[in-house]
Image (cartoon, rainbow, N blue to C red; front, side, top):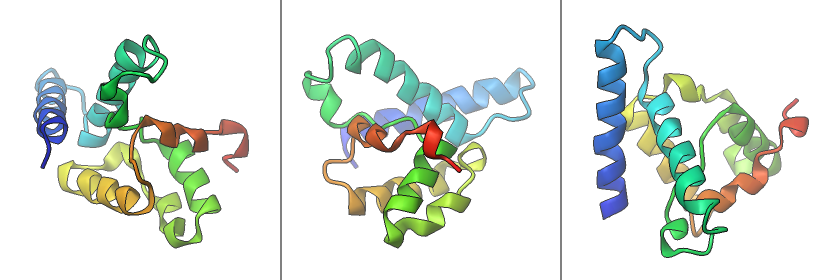
Length: 121
């Protein structure tokens, strides 16, 4: 496991646990992972126009729109349309990341090219 993945796991669990501690019933690893991805997208990727070295390994924000479009465009990943990212726990999140990595190299924020809300349905 690389340094980014170790960092991601630690922070996603910290976010999820803190949200749970303060009574957020919908806290999940998937939601925490999306918080991390959105933060890194806005603080690193967008301000550097995707040109910095960190942009090469930062995950895209995983959500229903992204997974549905990938499932439609790539027949081998059609089961992704049924993944509920808001319910993902640590193991299922990383299984999903492994599945995506096996089809996309490099696996990074550029996968957002599939994020097209107008094509979701």
